[in-house]
Image (cartoon, rainbow, N blue to C red; front, side, top):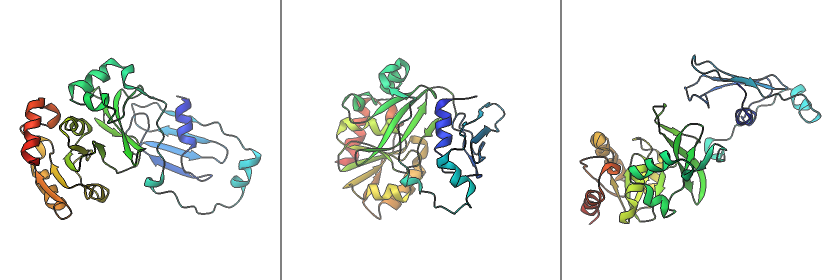
Length: 266
């Protein structure tokens, strides 16, 4: 299987001549199944997952510019930390309006208003069939997270290496939620939605939360115990409370969602 985008992906990996890497497959997303080996003049790659036929080579050849690095002794180099790796929007991302199913999915999950008001950047991944939310830091794109529109695993896929949460809104009162849809669903009520993209609280999350006047932890209904635990940690840095929800915020009707939000911010 030879794909131009895949060859470009392999060529851009940080890998010394004659070195090798083992990482998650960029095609099937299986963990630690994708092998890349540098022969000194080309890179060979292969996914070892039984149902994935991804394999190939980049086709690089010795040139005047790379021959020196191939023939000289290898010197140790420091790989950039994940946060230092710039995020580039993949060619497979297209405007959300290009796919009606994706657009309807955004509407059904109460996120269309935030998209329509240009409060968030949402796209569609034509290769993975995902609704994609772009993650920003100081107005720059640093990552993207995609929700599968099929039974494709994982359900949520993070494209980059940033640990920054997804943020929708600019109020100093933040609602800490699990996913991007829930974050977008609270925006219309003049609060900021902050999506952990999971339930784990990282130091990078705390650094963001410290900027808010108040934080309300509003995880999905099945994670109430986790919400209480997070609230105790966050309370050390900023005023914080827990919202006990009858259902996930993105699933609630506007009237019910507004009632809950007003209850915890007034």
